Image (tube, rainbow, N blue to C red; front, top):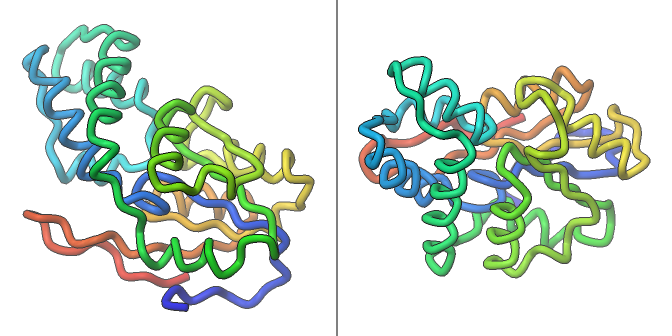
Length: 206
């Protein structure tokens, strides 16, 4: 197994979706760019990756504030998701995480904890043939405070009936790792795939 799993009595694995299970971040960025263009808004690619794990509606609200705009949050969020779903046939899994899922499925329960809304997560996991692997799904509409708040991870642990200290989190962003730590969970940082124009992301580690 390429990812280094830390030592511990882990009774559940909690996975972020975008950028962790699914190599979906480039597709999400294309969808954002196209959706925002209608409103004359910009979304720098480095900022997009820095905000990984932030809920869609929070991103729109923050962009409105930063750029002095009044983009309709619900309408734009729906437009962006439609554009993302149109690209799902191109979606691939992150190989190292897919390896973990395939090798440990059935040994411990799995949950997804995502800053994306349920329809987006279901679409991604369905496209990858992985939806039935996950017993619990916690998405943006299920909690009030996004990562780095631990709320999503704690909710997933509660739904699985597993104490936080016995959960292992797989994440690709600093916000996600901070959220896992705040939840009292150990974590594995998944290496970001090489971006076409921006070099490599973080190295894999714990």
